[in-house]
Image (cartoon, rainbow, N blue to C red; front, side, top):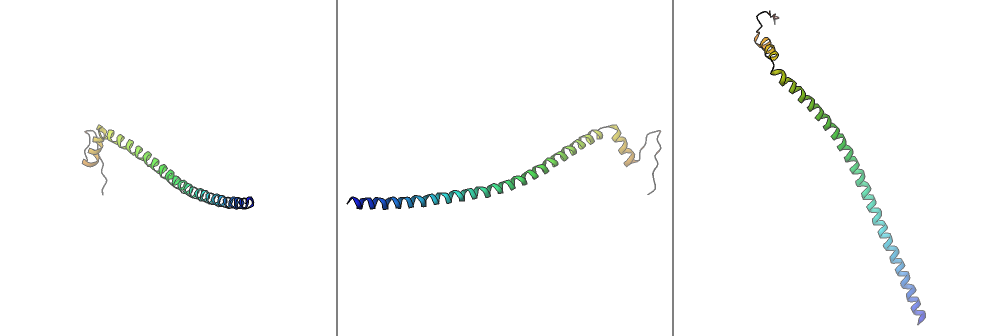
Length: 108
């Protein structure tokens, strides 16, 4: 009887070992699959990040251009409020001149 119990326990140990190997193979496969998915996702995110950095640079350039344009508008606004602007407009559009000035107009 002791021989039979030893055979059974040896068989059970062999089955347990096979199940353990199978389980380890499944776990290894799942881990490799997860590493692959994470790698692909990482590459995709890096590409998006590169695109966003390019877009960010373009937007910063646009902001700088708009700030320069704003400065030009402020300078023009200050110029419009001066007497020099009024005189220039009067000369150009209305053909007016000061008392001691002579305006020459070209023929069109």
